[in-house]
Length: 434
Image 1 (cartoon, rainbow, N blue to C red):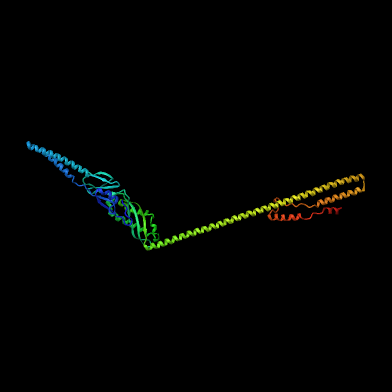
Image 2: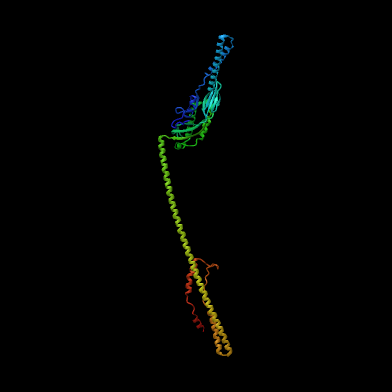
């Protein structure tokens, strides 16, 4: 069926048409209306009974003419008339039977159902295809479209909202299908169904609009109308009709309120654009601050690395200096011990020699030399005992001492001063002792 323009309400009606125009009316409607029911204009009359009755009359006439006993010319005439009556009767019966067979054929369009009546009472429905109605008083009273989903548009004017603001119009579009042809034509009919459907749709739309605020009226467009479809199905199921789909394609507000709403939407869009711009600016500033923070962290880490490297170098230098000082001290100690031992051995040797010389010569001079050598040994021992001792500073932490960087630096500064002190004059001590 052709869809009716959404700018005006659809009209559902039934039409009377011959069998040749049924398909065209069901598919295209009539003058902008929806035609789901066609009342066929029947060509089936009882004229086919005339040739049948004439054939029966002709056969009976032939029987009567052939039944009489006549001779001569009268008998020949009666025989000719009887034969002619038989021929006319047979031809009339054949014509009447053919006429009856041809008028009993009914073809139902695909997607439709025919409502069969007998003596005006509905007996059954006819499926699509060819059917033979042999009973003279059986006829297809209605042809109902039961397969097509029929579109229906119902605009509702001046529909008030929750604030009692009348909306200019609400377009409502639905599709319905006739599920029970007999129930539909016997209960309501196409013309009455148009009024019932229009009033039901308007009532459902007005109830929905009453629960809606005016500023949210545009939310009705494309909203979920499953509850309205269920309500309409409950109301129209007793007529053999089922709603297969519905929606609200358009809502039109009053002109003045529409201007206010347009201004509000424009302000909302500008606010959204400003919020978006401010969000981008804020994000850009936050990103810049984060980059500065990361850069400062990298600089701080680099400086910490440099300080640690300098501290490690200082520790290495102090350790190297301490190691050099310890080596020098050990070398000095070894030299002193070597010289002392050498002097001691030389003195002992000289003492032995003098003792042997004294023993050999028993001379006073030998005794004096022995005494002098003994004193020299004592002086050497005294000098060896008062020799400077090396200072060893342990930095490995084994002794539990202070190993901080400050103590290390102080030790590094004191060692050169200790090393710069003047050594003891051994010659003077030896001379004094002598």
